[in-house]
Length: 371
Image (cartoon, rainbow, N blue to C red; front, side):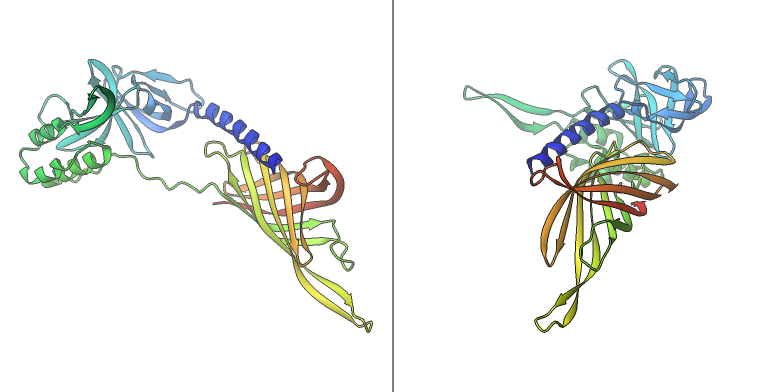
């Protein structure tokens, strides 16, 4: 068991390092930029721009074109099309920055995230010149009876006063304002939309659209041909069933944990005391547990795995070590043909990956479907 744990730790560590490198790579998505002169530039914007506290928009007219960096003083706004996220020029602490527009209407709501990832919120009312911050802070006691502590005593209510000032033409909304103890995207967005609706405005939130993401799990129905002879009546073994592959890292789907269940049905001849022969039918189960690495997706994608196959029948349970190397052949983005040759062997002791005795050659053939 310690060898399995060691393999998992090594593989996951490699996976995390790889995913960290990938997370730093640009992620260009469809969007547009409105220049300071009002011109609209359509193309691709680096999604990492939303996390840049100083305000930066990296833009490409085409995916293969050279990127251009825009600062808030150079453009009015930029927006991601599919995600519905819009960022506009603003001033925070006398610096030009990009503010995310959460709601647009009679009162518009904006969010700014600083270098510490702390969020602050701004509102602007039609006809009023400047955006107003919704001030908020938590007050702490530092000393109590000579002891240094860090206990929260209260939250400020200045944000409530500001909201009431800007929404004084809709006093019926005051009870909803007073229950906002801590300003956040959800409660402020709901409040501002509610206020705008009072005046007949039906502007929708510009909050990111909820995109249904695939589970990222792979299911592989198919058959396994094995050269092993389970009974004297069989020259080979044929299993049917399905495998399941789960990525170990969300950002990097090249490292996976594989399992599944396959079954073969056998007939065995038993001779009784009076020389009468009886045929007995029974099931033979195969459960793989493996770690897998796949090369990046292409028309033909090589894949390699190492692990164990657990077998169970009426005769008992045993386990064999296994190496496999095969390919996926893409039919569509979510469906591939999988062909996976495999060698099974018995280790020098339980859970050992060091081969001691060759057991069989197996080959899996089937489809792999991404859910």
